[in-house]
Length: 306
Length: 284
Image (cartoon, rainbow over all chains, first blue to last red; front, side, top):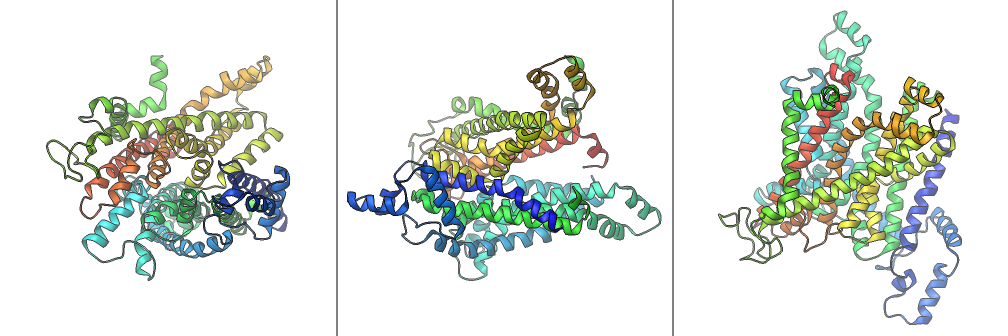
């Protein structure tokens, strides 16, 4: 197991290097001089030069990259050009609200998406299967920002039940959480169905049925448990679609999370903030997938060998 | 040619399956609207014609937008924008990702490692975030949107093509061609690539759906196609501001995106099953 973990960590290094390189490029190859952006448009030449020196922008690019990586490793992602506070502070503040939304969306995905897929797989091509498949397909086809608007129209504007934007209470989380979860529900339902069908066509399932076990016992004990490994992996990967979906969802609901932070930063040409936020999201995504891989190896010993 | 058509699983499925036909026809209608939309549009999509935010009427089927432009005309032109971005973005992913994947699978060894690690780096930026990073570099706009979404499609194609090549490379006809002295380029182009066409095509149907969703999302954020050029995503964004009094402004374009993406995903599902008889038997 330890060998497996170390091997996976080593494999991760080039990816992390690449992620750092790409995010480094965000501030260095975009139009505009970072020193001018940080010092302010009307700063005098001396201040701009001083800022340039402080940021290390007068050095060669490879040296700058080394500094960037060194600082990032120490948790320093620079200062936001537009808000003049450390980037990490802004990201830290935005991460908690996004985590809340992602948690709700993940719960919806697990409690609706997986059962939907199981129902589908029990009797393929039956009426329940067709209904569940249409629901799942709509889930992956509707643009989530549009679905969010429809929810606002129904629950906020027509029925007046839930707030349509902002934060404050748990009621503020419901509509954005559901919006964010919709795509994942569709995705997970489709993948659960596929892996269940795969498992249920195996010989041991036929044996279980032949020895007279009831349909539901077979589906849950022999089917879902064996399909679980695939589903857990997909839930890990699904975090990617939640992080990416949070960008649009948070903009629709004017919700102060990391997705909206990225979009605002792009509009403000606050490249240090764009860089930091994208780096943090990529790191979270890569690390969660590493954890899922390890979990996977704990659950299924066969994986450690390969 | 006719024998090939009859044997091709994709063509057979299109002849056989009603669902495949319906989704193919919907897609085709959108393609026709994309090609002829600007000619079919009853009004100039950028002209301010009448009062703003008028509901649907005989003159303006889908009503007018926030500055009195005809929503129906704007949606027809947006169909061309969405389709163009979709096809070009998928093309970028297909060509770049496909070539990288074939080369990685064919040569294996260090070439494979280098290519696939680069692909892993792209995969570390989930979904629309890679496109946002690219837009930060290039700035918004029609062409940059295509490039941004296209780059996001590269990893998927690379992985698919590599996997297929790895499973095909030991096939008899490839080994035979190699032993007869065929060069690498010829092996890849003449003996491996034709076998990939079907699965790349099916993957592209779903990839087109994703690309169109991504374009709509970026344009909604204001980082994709820029006004005055109409786009479904942009129309939803301006409709959101008048959602209480004129919800139709957002609902028509939103429904247009949803129907197209739904049809493409459905078509992709049916064709994928047709290519994979093993899954078909288990009912997937």
